[in-house]
Length: 324
Ligand code: BYC
Image (tube, rainbow, N blue to C red; front, side, top):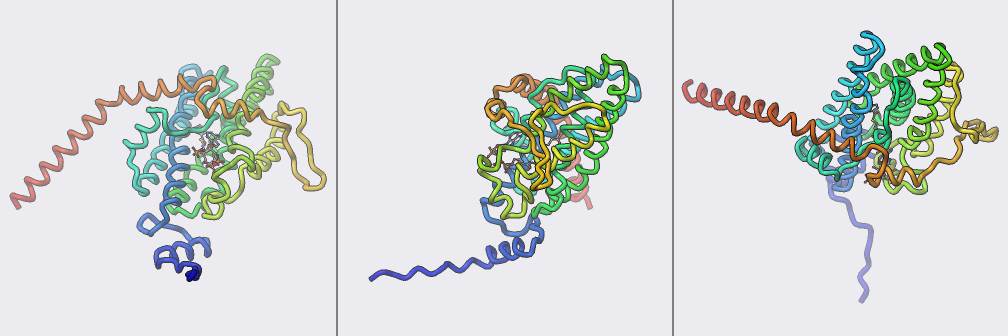
């Protein structure tokens, strides 16, 4: 005799989680969550944290070559901010059960992802402007909706990150504005940097929606609020206006205003190049990872000293407790 299969009743924990999702409420570290939710958050937060850390490299290369003391100080502060963003995100990941050592091992062994954008070289000072304006601009566009991500520690980290990214974008815009209003050689340098960073910055939003295996579920879980293509399109609309103020152009002959949707649309992107970069074969993948490995090795003595100090402090505390 066939048994009748009704819908399974969710466990109380699952029901609570479902309620949090249905009411667009926050999940906190001590709440029960499905394994797949935890896994996808860890996947995204890890990718994001490592992007911040690897993202320090193209800019830190220019600190010693910044054209003035003021520019040097500003760039140094920006690079330090990126390190801070990485730390907030590693802490958010820790609340999900993955510690910083595990995450760092995954990065330096080449297993973990970081944003494709940081595998492109920063060739001139104008690249500092283009990175700030386009790369931080794309990051803000992507990350402002993440301030409402359902996982509390991630959403709260994003609030602070976005505030700092806004400052970064303004400094990038201002570098480009000054170059664009400078000599003709400076203007050419600014345009060349925009030409090289434009398409890679559009690819930061991830693959097209039809080819994005994670988006749908992440949106059901209120982690992502918009699809990759929606955010990319929104970003293009912002850049089209801002580039006019710069007196530069976007290297996109097919960009057009869609009268039906009242939105700007970009031309085709080279998704084969994107896949190559993700597969580790971008212009700077090997160099970026090697530099991170070297920095990790060079910092070993700091970690050892900190661990020895912590051990000494806890032994001292234990002795004091025994004596009390
Ligand atoms: N690069 O299903 P999809 C910054 C991967 S740093 C590399 O659409 P999802 C800054 C994706 O991980 C800003 N990988 O995925 C720092 C997935 O692979 P796995 C960084 C990419 O997660 C210093 C696969 O492709 N911001 O601001 O739904 C200086 C399929 O994709 C990329 C963030 O990370 C990419 N561009 O959506 C200056 C924001 N795109 O994991 C500035 C947080 C996709 O299955 N992250 N992949 O192996 C996100 O919002 C989402 O993770 C993404 C991708 C939109 C990037």
